[in-house]
Amino acid sequence: MNFLGALTSIKVIVKTYDTPSVSGAVITFNYTKTTPDTFWAGVDAFHSFAPTFGDASIYGYYEMSANTFFAKPLLAPGKTLEELTVIVAPLLAKLDSLGVPYTSNITIHPTFIAGYKALFDGESAGVNMLTSSRMILREHVVANHTALTRVFRSAAEEGYYFIGHLIAPGVNGGVKPETSVNPIWKNGLLLPLYNHFWNGSETEDQKWAVIDHTLDVIDAGFKKISPGSGTYLNEVCVVIVLKPRY
Image (cartoon, rainbow, N blue to C red; front, side, top):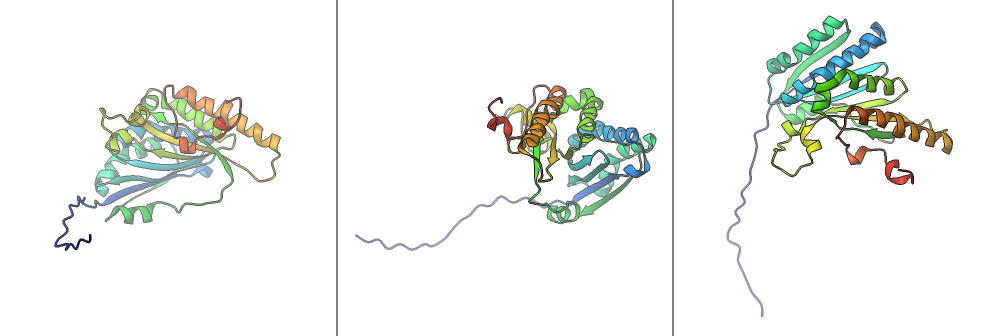
């Protein structure tokens, strides 16, 4: 038996959203014109304002090492250039009072894509490194951002390179209190990835020594300052599940 049908109409309902303008701030410290203690006081100032930025629905991407810090960008969808300038001004004033040399630039872009292309650096691939990470909750930053900065500094001065994210998904991601989303994500604020770069000439014993140090010292330091938190499984040190003693 055959059937012949005729399609007379198609109805599709699409929910669309306006594309907001995006403002972004880029802040870079000049390590060569200051002392290590002043440099890290500036990093601590940045951490102290992280809850304020998260509450203002700002996403941050920042990188740091023992002699490098830049936030590129602090991204503020839907906010005007003037609004972002007001939000960032207290941090810049604090940097001025500490004597931290820095440059800053705040711009506005007509769409998110335009802002992304203008403000974010391109992603690289093929880098040979060991990575681990820790989610830092808002309560940890509020309670003791200075102790948190000391953990960053200790790892950075051992050669670890940080790629940090200011995320606040409980504010920016539409994660409501009554949902089943993991509470760590609801209350998360910072997600730093700490990376050790391999040079390609290490022996197996040397590699395991670095891995052990990352797990037993660097990870342990971040866990101590962030009790009750966790990490992003996709960017945790995989040896935790590969090495028998873990």
